[in-house]
Length: 106
Ligand SMILES: [Zn+2]
Image (cartoon, rainbow, N blue to C red):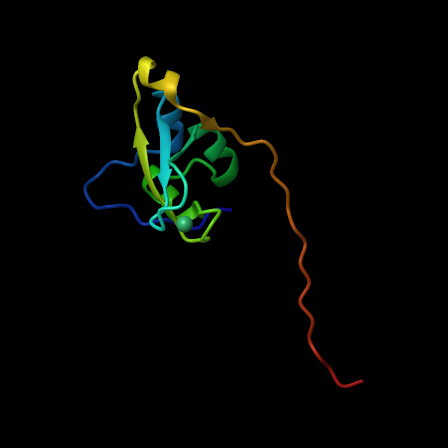
């Protein structure tokens, strides 16, 4: 589950569900400058992270090149702008099982 996020004082929460209902998109750019901006729909982010505050999404999105958190912004593109945007949709989510071993005296 997503970790708790700190909310900025004085601002009402702006959750992913609200962004989804308003037709917003998320634009993610990495500080490392690799690749172009990537666009995501809030509904997919809710599937991954739960209905968290939009300001917390950036810390959870990792660059596929450098693995660092990305700079993420909520955008409200017009219908015309949407025509030019190629959105990345969530295709599959899976869980990886890992094992950790300890040594004991027999
Ligand atoms: Zn990067």
